[in-house]
Length: 124
Image 1 (spheres, one colour):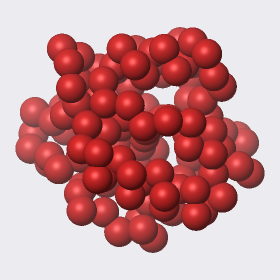
Image 2 (image 1 turned 120 degrees about the vertical axis):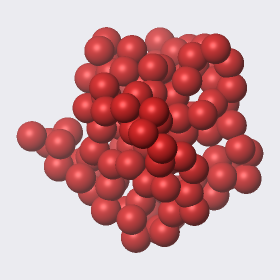
Image 3 (image 1 turned 60 degrees about the horizontal axis):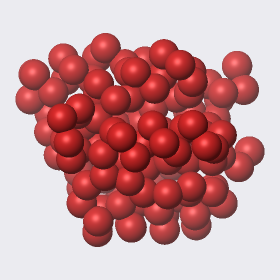
Image 4 (image 1 turned 90 degrees about the vertical axis):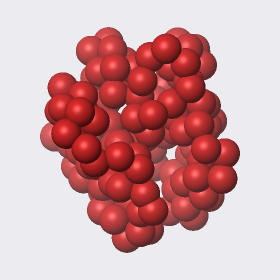
């Protein structure tokens, strides 16, 4: 199953690496954005099957809050990729029904496993 994926990542090098990795896996990366406002615009214009989001993103709304709000409307799986694993960040993420939480730097096989979990969730 080929997924349409939106990436929210404010570190351009990480975003580019994610995009290339996901494309090599055969998926369609719609775009890499750095903030919630741009992410919302993508959802309004395109079908997004999977959201991959950093938690610490540009703007007033963090990645966890953005993911939660988008998930309420569009009901898609979420994978978090972040450099944070402190209790406050985990507490924010726990409000979202996510299929994966990867800590940077992530390994490609870990990302692939999380994407495959998302596919199973979509099919179910």
